[in-house]
Image (spheres, rainbow, N blue to C red):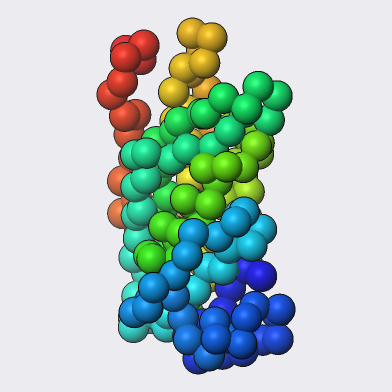
Length: 166
């Protein structure tokens, strides 16, 4: 259940209501897990242009799979769309579904990238996961599909300022 452009029913096991209507424009409950989340896409209004879309999630939360304690991260997601854009409400619900999900930092970061790639099939994608310190050690996880398209302005993901990072 990873993606569905508006108005398309791929028979992917989502509810009949959801198959007919995207999450945008209607109440949508928080998915029970990242696997249950649906990432809606919308048509790219400028498929001929190469441009970068950036999503920033400064309050990402998941659970440590060993201790059950919360882990916090600042995520920066950049992608160059092809035919589809990631719909932001669906992305918000997908990211929030990690709140009760136990996984290591590396797994969360790369799993998010893979789901977005499956959903929108971008020309290029990069995610920077800046995880807040646990045990005094911040963990930063970076993933990208390839080199960005030539001639494209791609801003640096930056390092969010927080205690313990210079």
